[in-house]
Image (cartoon, rainbow, N blue to C red; front, side, top):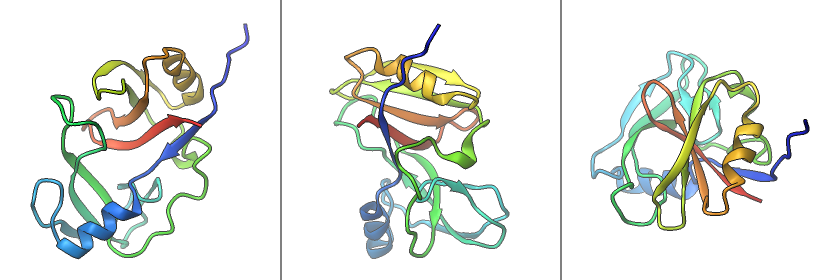
Length: 157
């Protein structure tokens, strides 16, 4: 049996969100970000890789872009404290996060959850294709299995 693949794009934390956070010193909940030195392994939502020990980080509340409604939520995420060039490739699943269990939540155009699935990181493309097979699915959010934090979004290309 052949699995049909779906062309997709990965959407990390936008540079505009980080610029606004640094300018206002306020996150999505109106709180100042916490400044940290990485212990190593913190998932960075700006460049979609794990932090190296000693990197300066920001920990702050983030509300992933969804239309206003009951499914819109704010949760903690890490990003670089300074400038970040972003991910090297937004046309492929983040290489450093393969093998990491994640949940992909599917949302429709109204921002309502219309499905989802946990995967072990071994073949995330197959899970993405399965979820995008439903024409009602507008966007997928990758979420940390243990903490539930937003990791990145996936859209059809």
